[in-house]
Structures are given as C-alpha cells and as structure tokens.
Amino acid sequence: MEKNYWSRLGAQRRVSRRSVMRGAGVAAAGITGAALIGCGGSDDDAPAAASGGSAATAQATSALSTVVATQAAAATSTQTSVAAVATTAAAVDPYPGVKRGGTIVGNWVQDPPTIDPYGNLSYLAKYPSLFSVSRLFRNGTAEGTSPYNLGPEPDLAESAETEDAITWIVKLKQGVKFHNKAPVNEREVTSADVVSSWAKLVADESPNKDTVPNIDSCEAIDDYTLKFVCGAPSATFIDTLGDPNALHVQPIEGHNGGFDPAKEIIGSGPWIFEKYEPSVDFEFTRNPNWHGSQSPMGSKFSAPFADKFHWISIPEYQNRLAQLKAGNLHYTGVSSSDVLPTKDEMPGLQWFGARPALMSFLYFSNNELDTNPVWSDARFRQATSMAQHRDDITELGYETEAMIKAGVGSREDLVRWNNLVPAGFEKWWLNPTDPYMGKAGDTFKYNPAEAAKLVAATGYDGSEIKFQYYPYGGTGGTFNKIGEAVQAYLTAVGITTEIEHQDYSSQYITQTFTGNFSGIAWGYETPFPEVGGYFPRMFGDNARNHGRIKDARISELDALQAAEADYETRREYIYEIQKINAENMYYVPGQAGAGVGWTGVGEGVGGYRVWKSYGFGTEVAPWLWLKA
Image (cartoon, rainbow, N blue to C red):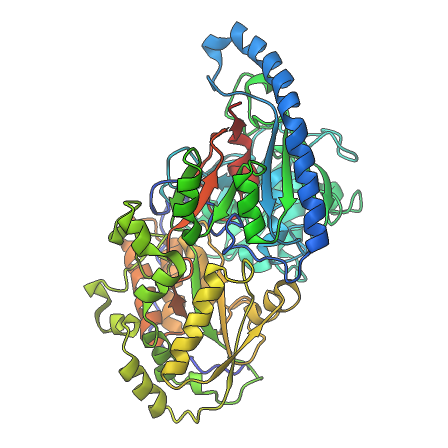
C-alpha cells in the first residue's frame, strides 16, 4: 500500500441521483475584457525554451518579417475580390464590416514535446492540435464577454441528452468533413472516429487518461450517435468533453497506421495544418468547409476570416514585445510593468486585461523518496502559507499600485488572493478573506511570527530542502519573480531551501508534477474550463495527484459536487473543499495567476475574443480579421 501522510477518516454519504438534462456548467466571470493569460499568450504563463535559441529565434524572426512584408499586397487583392462579393449580398452578410483575407501572425514560446495531443500530458502538445482538430464541445467565446460567464457550446456534437446523468446520448452533426488531405480526403466524420480517439485517450499507456474522470465508456450506436456511460451521476459531463486537455477527435486513420499524428495534424477544425519547423514556426491555412463558422452563407462569408495563420517561435519576452511594437505580431501577452509605458508609446494599441482561472501553488512530496518529512506535519505546511505577504507578492508580480493610480482598475479588481479554486473562477472561488472561511482563513494571513513558531514546533532542524520549479516565461517573468519571493519569505521564518530549476518537458511535467520528486515544488495548475476539474486532479486516485493526497471528506465532497445540478448546493460543497484544504494546506495557493494579465492587440486587428485554457486555435483565431 502506498505510504500517505495525510489520510484522514470522514463519514461517507451516498451520492444522490438526479435527472440532469443538460450538464453544461457555467463558469464564473473574471474582469471583463479579453485575455491570453494561462493559455500560452503571456510571457508568464507559457513555458519558455530553456535555452535559446538565438539562432533559431533569428530564423523565426526572419520568417516573420517575410510574412509581414508580403502581407500588404496579398491583403489588398484578397480584400478587393471579397468586397465585390460582399456588395452583391450585403443584406444577408452575417458579418457586416468584416474584411476577409490576409495572414494573422501570432507567437509561441517553446517547442511542444509532440504535436500529437495524446502523446504527452503537457498543454504544449494540445495547443497546435486545437487549430486543426475538433472536439465534441468547445468553450464558448464572444467579443467583450468573459469566458467564465459562458458555458461550453457544440463543436462536432449536435446535442447531448440524459435521463439520469449517468448514460448520455450524444448526436453528431452530419456532413462534417475532415480536411482535404490524404488519407482522409474530405471524408465525413463519424462515430467511429470519436470511439477510436476515445480509445487512444483512455488507453492504459496514455498520459492523458485521467483527464476524463468518471466517464467509463464510449460506444457508437450508429454513424452519428454515441453513448457515454459515467461511473456516477455527472452534472459536468459536457464540460468534461469540452476540456481542451481531453478528447481531440482525430481520424481513425491516425490510430491504425494511415498517418502519424506525431508528424501530421489532420482534423475537421478551422485551420488546415501545412507545416511545423521546430523552434521556427507553424503554418496553417483556412479551412473553407469549417462546420463551426456560425454562418449559413458558405465559405465566402464564413470564418476563419483570415486566409492563413502563421505562428512564430519567439522564446524571449523582450523580442516578442519588440515585434508587437514593430507591427510584426498581431497580439502578444505583455508584462504588467510594460503595460503603461507601451500604452503611452502606442496609443492605438488595443488592451485586454483579465484574471485567469490559473492557480500557482506550493506542494510537497509524499512518496518513498522521503521518510517522515517535516511537511507531513500540518503546522509546517500552514507556516509556509502564513510566511507569505500576498498583497506585496501581487504588487511584485503585477504592479497593481501603478495600475490603480493610472485608473486602469480598482484595488478590488486587481488585488485578490487565490484559494484552492483560483480567483479567476469567481463563481466558485471562496475569497480567503471572507468571514465564511472561519479559522481556516487565518492560514492565508501574513503572520511571520506565528509561522516561525509553527516551524519550530515541528522540530525542524534547519536542514536544506529542495525547492523546485520550471522557470516559466524566461528569466524575470512574473511566475519566476514570485517564486523567488516565496523562497525569501520561507527563509525569513527559518525554512532553508535551495532552488532547483527543472526542464519542463523532460523533468517537471513528467516527474515532479506527477508526484515523483523529493522536497517542495512550486508550479501552476492547469486552468480547467470547468471548476470540477481541480479536485480529481489534485486529490483523486490518479497519477496526477501531485502530492498524493487522500482526504476522505474531500473525496466525498468531490463526488457530491460532480453530481449536483443545483448551483447553490454545489457551491457549498466546493466552498467546503476549499476550507478543508486551507485548514491543512495540502496545497498552498500562490499569487502567480491571481493578478490581472494583459494582452496587447494591434489596432488593425478586429474580432479579438476572450478565451480560456488551450483552445485559442478554434475559439479565437477563426474570428480574427485585419482591418486594413
């Protein structure tokens, strides 16, 4: 039996069974606007290359310059021809004023470990797939609306129905075609492709099998009908299928040797994959037959609005910012310290700010590598939280005072503390300063004297503890600055640590993040599109339980919230989970991700939408258009 320092008893209650006709939960609002934060668009929230790639960056920048240099002429001819068509049908054009054509240029910061989304747990493997590969459901987006106010919407699915929230019948849209590429050659998407993709997702050897907890099976009833069976009533079934981490519907040929998904991306999504050159770029072209366009008018009036999407590798943040200022990038994440100066320098730049549903946290090893570690004592874990001055840390990472003085936002908007549920998930987030927290709220308050007493009471002898994390976003990024500050706060209360920077793909995501480490780790939790994703990942019986934590009451509450369709009742379960974690500090919530992140978008770009998680290619990119 696996050793576990944090087992505790709890009364077990039977999960109530309710009839749920629609399981799509609605997430909560963050600050109104748009954001790339937590989705790889910011220098702080996407892992940057560990080494650089000065030569590779130069090559990528050269490729970028070529695109920008040729785009003006191409855009002129394309927009002229489209304008002529639009004139004859202006009365029925569903997108009046939108110019079509040209190339949207974006950036990424680190090579994916693979372009097969089933080949690695890392979000880096999901991101490129979601330009080209559809899901059954996708996250809702709309201009000027926070994605945390929106639930999932159909992608390949036409509907999902259930009588008992256990057995779900999903109907596929008919006539959806894969891309016009061998070996599929525009054949229709059917249930067989979904079942094949499901089998790959949940296979024993799959690193992603735990992304669909509680869904036990998927089978085809006919070419357009699927039956899913859950292990217990699920009020979040649709949200689970809409998670960009999970079910990417690849052609069955990608699973039986017809093509290699690690070398070729083929799907039915908005963009047709053309090429990938590591450390240089991805190129995608417009899918004229995309089923997700929302337009009944056909290819001339449907999204994607651009002809191409060129995705450039730019690991270094300062280079990304320079390329945005030069007009060579159409959007990029901008550090808080650069927002106001850049705003003054480029008054026409569009700014979108939002708080992501992204939690950073300290977590502690709990395996055979450690024998009775000091952090098995709850007092030590509580001390690591009480050692941190969360308001000062937020200021360090997000320069909130300058933003407030500039009238960009209020203190209430800009300064919030993450709980186990991050502050961006406002509908389900329990504010650590809320009186409802009771005594559990004390563990969030800055109290270095009490923290030092708790550390001493554990008998800790001052021996060095490894403090490990992956340096997200390159040197000096928000995550790294906050990580270094957390280490300093720990030192101040008598905890001796030594920072170890880890390679993301080869060590952090494959070992430390899965609980195979010794000491203390510092990291981000995936920004799940549905709040129920946090609890089975962080406390469940799976390989992604970072601290290998078993708490009977949290497990009971997780089962209850997952099956509960009534919002108020479900929220109470989720609040209690947050309080139990605060009392024990199994995971110590951090402030990286709790602040407002910013994205600068060129003044010549229209259609920018708020998004969450990793679905940018499907949920935002098709709607971007060039104004001139």
